Amino acid sequence: MGPDLLARLSRFAARDLRPNGGDRPHRPELWAFVAHDRERLAEVRIERTALIAVLEGTKELTDQSGTTRRFPTGSAMLLPPGWCGAVVNDPSAGGRYRALVLEFPAEMVRRLLRAHGTEGLTQRTRPGDWHVTLTPAMTDAIHHAAGGLTADPPLPAKLAEHRCMEVLLALLEDGVWWLGPVAPTGTADAVRQLLRTQPDIPWTAERVAGALNLSTGTLRRRLTEEGCSVRSILTEERVAHARALLEGEGLSVQEAAEACGYANRSHFARRIRAAVGVNPSDLRGR
Image (cartoon, rainbow, N blue to C red; front, side, top):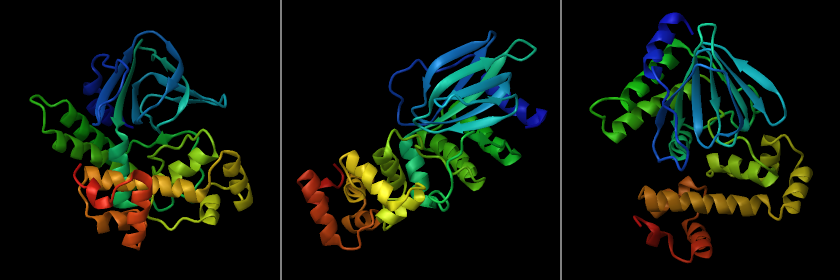
């Protein structure tokens, strides 16, 4: 990222404004990390998709495998929910470290993936360095979102969110496709996160195994050891997705069934009744 682009974002990191912990609200947020001394955070866990731009100094990330990667001034990374490791923020020769962090709630990421698809998501190896190129277009989108989140008087929440969605779209357009959770703690969790992004696909054990670079036999054996199966996980994720669509977004039963991969409305209704004890129509607008 050139000095002009760097300067455009730097005005949003004039002083240290970092979160205090606790539950994050269901909206995008902007943070600034400023330090004058080298700081090491030993146990960091990323709870929400986080786009981090290093504006001054160097950030080091050491994941749980012990691999360390450095991000100098002008570089950026996108860390997914579930990332764990140690972080070092190292000031530049001028004696200051600054970074801008844009956090996206999980539901916003899910809406993006549902609306625009994730072609290639299940065919590629997960990245290990999480690097994002700060192109002029990407920087424009971040600048626009940051301006919206810090506007005085505040922008309407939906308008500020729309600006942040532009950043997610720019990431997806630039091939940054690991937007959802990609740090599973076991095979069942990996399957669950994979199916969660695209519950409408006609998933089979063979298709899931291929997406996770496993043989079908290995996938089934590991899931059996964890007390579940592809079918049971798929049902759980589709039912959870259906509830979100019916209760939160007010879709019709037919629309929710199709979005969850059920061509047969009656079959969809039976699955919902078996899981939550009521008909799909009873969930609408709760």
